[in-house]
Structure formats: C-alpha cells, structure tokens
Image (cartoon, rainbow, N blue to C red):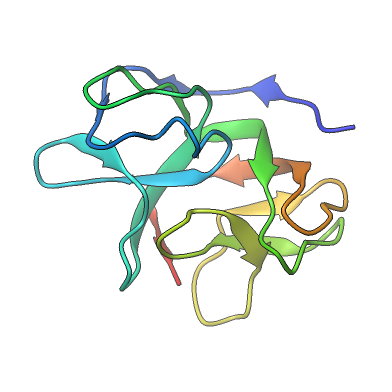
Length: 127
C-alpha cells in the first residue's frame, strides 16, 4: 500500500489549469510562476502534486521526501529509478536519457499508485 513521509513542500504556486485529475503526478512551473503539467517537449519538474487544485487554486507540491506517485501505463518496479513523463507527469522507469527524479520504493502497477523517494530540489527534466 502506498505511503508518504513528507519532506519539503511548496504551497505558494497557483494552478495554471484544472489539475484536479493530476494528483500524485509530477508538475513543472511556467513563466508566470504557476504550476503546470510537464510540456509536450519535456521540461523541468519541481515535485509531485499532493492536492487536487482547480484553475487559480493553491498547489501543494512535495519537492523531496517519500510521496505517493502515479505510475505510467507501463508501471514501475521497486528499486527502479523513475522519471516524469511529458504531458501527463506520471512516473515511468528511467531510461538513462535524463536525470531521475526518484527511486520506486514499491512496485506500481499500470496507472497505479506507489511510494517513491523523490528529490526534485533543483528541478529535473521530464522526458
């Protein structure tokens, strides 16, 4: 069962769009200082969205710690390095082409939730 051990969280960024369906996905920040899903061409992710904000509402974003994270349709295996996918921000096994944003602490089934030790303090590129 997925669990959390909160570390550092941001709570000051507002949602640029409706992010109610993006809870436990990686997010980025746009040029207006608002939280967004990573762009289609990738981008810098800053953490995992913890709440379900609508447009203009505050986002709670865990930057580091143990967070519940949503897995991609491919799922992840405990011990895998993970990266954020573009457009949806879900986690997938890191391919070596980018910097990982965490380590899966348990296996996450296709589109399921799993615990992940995340470290996005400097921001890392989604692939």
